[in-house]
Image (cartoon, rainbow, N blue to C red; front, side, top):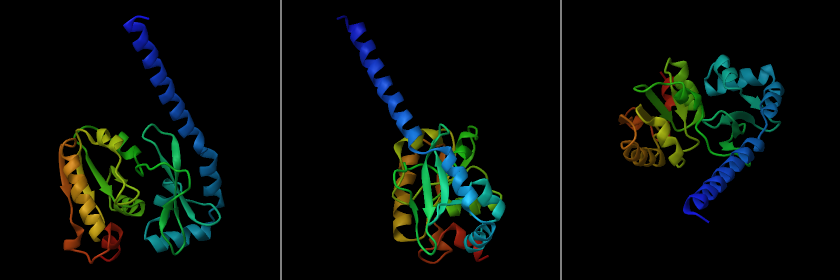
Length: 212
């Protein structure tokens, strides 16, 4: 077998594997599930959740907030547009990922719609990102926790200015510092906003605007 033929077979196998992986990821979650959860969320639940989070109903609807019978749901999409999972806000509890979900940037469309030179705001949580949107900020995304930042996201931030807005606890501060260093080799500029200078320990973006 010639070297060229061997390389062609290798490339084919790699591309086939990649295509199969994308298909598997696409098949994990169905868009119909998003619509089902949205439909299951009552008007009363939506109003109550809006008050609790301090986020306008219109913003929650825009991001397709739903209810799966046990928790509020928030769909998460891949940068290529397909659904990769859900984040679940348990009443009086934490926000966690639905089993089988893949980690993704919340509101990643905001980056995809931006142009070179735009400023991207990265919050530690989805609710913080929504709160920032209500204040007129655009191109706002969120990581699903301080410890999660995937290498594949770096290329999305190329030729962009990045502002990090992580929580004020020790974990948030340290992780933001690490990510800021990594981003400096990809983004145009990186600004790590230390909210602990104006907020108490353990507070976040949402707390800042809710207490003003």
